[in-house]
Image (cartoon, rainbow, N blue to C red; front, side):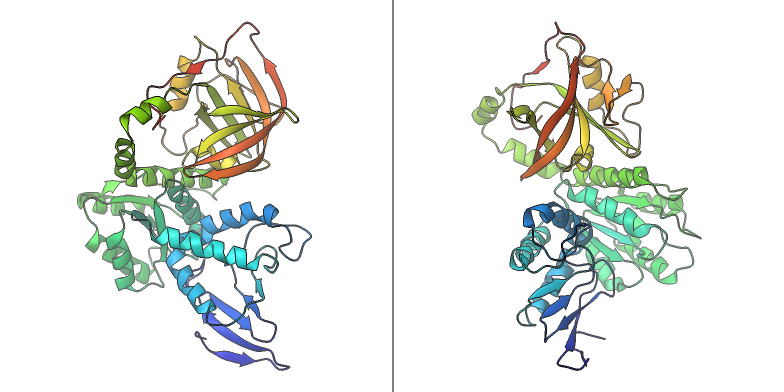
Length: 437
């Protein structure tokens, strides 16, 4: 089938097909029932959200999952998505979008279509991108690739994903040629199309690019080290240490992949961020730096995944219920554990007794390294680590969040807490300038 082909099912139900390649799968096709004005979109416009509602009756409830699903699965192929949406516009009125995951889109259809349009247009305008190449149906490559792509996007860099076996060599080289970073999921050694594609990548790799490789835990996998050496010999820099998957991936593995993507993305946007910092008026940055805050460490555990973050942008926000807000950078590793419903611990640092903890949690670690190694902890009722040397701690739950440019403002309610040293004082963070931490 190709775009424009139709099948008559009888009783007025004529189905028109719309080719929408690369929207999660290389051969994705939408189907439109002209009688009912229902568009079946496979994975596009979906969300991993489950309720008793057949339709999108509660926009506020589904919005976070709708956005997260887009960021992980659709955003990396925003160019393909815009092409598909252009074809959708030629179908006439669409009354319902019947996606493959989550409630059908009807009540808020136009709002959610506009979200896809604006998010994708913003994504294709991003100047700095990473090209992620993989074999979609091999091993665990699909979810591993999505985790890495999500990590890259958290930094403000763009990602475009491409299947090594279905894309043309010209397409692969064109994407690699305009990318600042190249990420490759190792293919099976017997896949001739993938091997030819990788050879074409080596032919266009440039010195200023960075490279990241990851294993997919598939049978007969091409080894990482020989390919990495070939890129390094061309002058390409390593964007993150190669991810070696020696057993079935766990949530910890996927978190490691996300952090690796963030590491590579931060490297890609470093020069841009430095220019932005330098462009701020000197008097303004000094004035903003006079806003002082306490010093805290947020600790969280979800399943086998643990994370921590040194925080100072923490402010009490309500009395009934007791609540406060935290500003969390989008590219921080803990960001994915600070979604609505997640639980964590806010550890309050003590004035005169915080330097060691501050130094430890400011370290930049290789993705996958235990953030709590060498730190004394206890386990809170909600399962998150409590820092034994903290002045006080509070057990909290995320109840809502607001997107604010490069940060999330997270509102949390306090469920329990204790002070270990009643006479102690909260550590205060004084800055000289306000345009970076």
